[in-house]
Length: 126
Image (cartoon, rainbow, N blue to C red; front, side):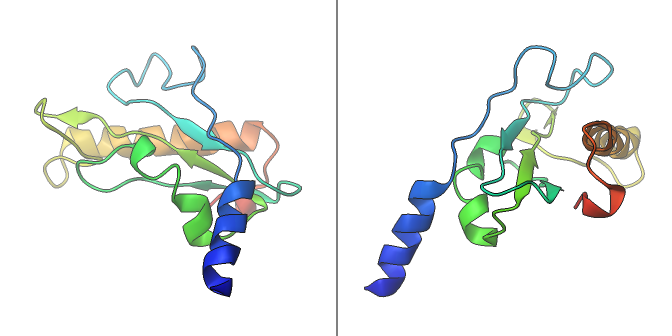
């Protein structure tokens, strides 16, 4: 069908993810966080989208799907990986209001600051 052909064409144009190079991942002050995967924009970059995956997943779980789901080709996608809580499941937050929550918020603020340092306008970081 035409919809299937359009989806296949879009999928073929999505660039592959960029693996985190040593030093580009979580900085030394956030060692518990996992890999950060980025997907470059398909067009002139108009902003950055930081996507936090769901409970038990990882950045790799969404990297192939996210650009096609959102269809925002002018955005650069940043997909960080949550830390493992209790050695079993990855999660951004632990107990409500616990120290883990503060760590996650600090980490997300760090990711935003990285995008601002790259020259992305604050109103263009999503």
